[in-house]
Length: 94
Image (tube, rainbow, N blue to C red):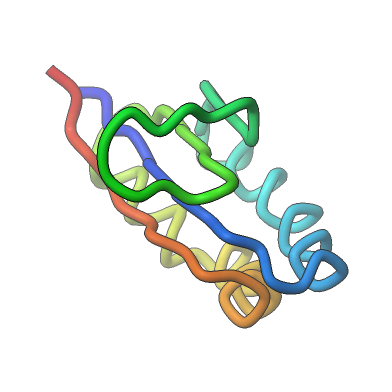
């Protein structure tokens, strides 16, 4: 069953977050992730939103978790987490 990353981000440090993006993209590709949305226009209809939103499709939950816990992505997070306020979750598809 497909699984989706839903990431909601407010970047606080553009320079450091750019380093995250350079490392994160190849890590996503390495694990077979497919970007479906990546920072395009967002319209908040209910609740509170964040400035940047990303959706990534994964083949399954095991692959998504393996990606997140991989050395490649953890290296990227070393730049991303301190540079932004983020909500990052995996959601099973239907």
